[in-house]
Structures are given as structure tokens and as C-alpha cells.
Image (cartoon, rainbow, N blue to C red; front, side):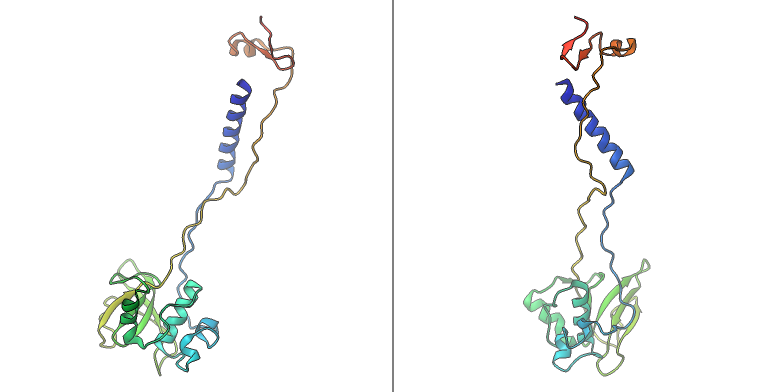
Length: 212
């Protein structure tokens, strides 16, 4: 019994030492905003982009939004057809993604004739979006405080297409196998050792009490 208790105490102490020397930290993957034009990634080309495959690739706001969603999530977006003014209703009718009026990173901002992707939300409320324009600018970013003022179009809201990654489970950077140490066999003990044992010392060789 004493051996079991001693081994348990040693295991706890070793665990404390390991945690102190090798602390663990949980990191959530940070959102990486796109502030520069795509450079040939397959999400925006005929290789993977549904709009590019049908001849309506960039410059085109829905082709860009489709590619950006694909890039962020690593999987084909559920909304893969329709023009910009239809995306909001296509999503609602099919219950593809949650939607609302609060800006979130990676969300698609929808207007009556345009879509863009939220890339940054500043503390002062400024919202940075990335976008493309049918028959116009291939790619640009813009900052808005009021999303209703966008080319005079009506603002519908946000489609929350971005799947935020789950936090990773904490993992010990160093793992030590459970160990225990056999007591050293000895026949002689100091007065301090004897007094701390309540005047009782166990001989490891014989498991017998020495002060019988």
C-alpha cells in the first residue's frame, strides 16, 4: 500500500514538472483575409469554379464569391448558380447556410445586384470586403461603415458561408510514460529518517519492520 501511494505521488510530481517545462497551448486557426487578387488558384478558374466552367468567370462577383467560399472551406459551395441578386433567395429557399444582418468574417454580403466577401471587421465598425465586378474590375477591396450604400443597391444581409474551424484539442508537447522507482535497499537509517517514519522503518529486503 505504501509503495502504491509513493508511486502515485511520484507520478503526480512528474506530471506537474512536465507541464511546467512543456506548457500546452490551444491555437485556433486564424482567418486569413484575401486582400490581393487571386493568382491562378483553381477555386477561381475553370478547374473548380462553377461559373468559370459555364463561361461566366471573373470579372464577375458571383464567380469570385463562389471561388472565395471554396478557398476558405476547402469544399464546393452549396450555392453554385444564379446571379448576384438571386443568391440571397436561393440560400433561403434551400436552407443552405445560416444568414442574418450581423457582419462576420468570411460571410457573403448580398445586395440586390452584387455580392462580396467580408474579409475584416475593425473595432470602429469598418467592414472590409473583397469583390469582383461583372464586365469591370477583376478584383478589389472596399471599406464600408454602412453596407446599404453600395452602388445604390438594396442590402439584403449576410450569408454565413464560412465554416469556422474548431479549436484543436490540447495535446501535451511531451509525454512521459508512467514510471515508478523501487526504494533503495538499505540496512542503516538516519535518526531523521527514523523519526519521520513515526519510529517505524520498513526493510525493503524483507518487508519487515526494523524496530520490532
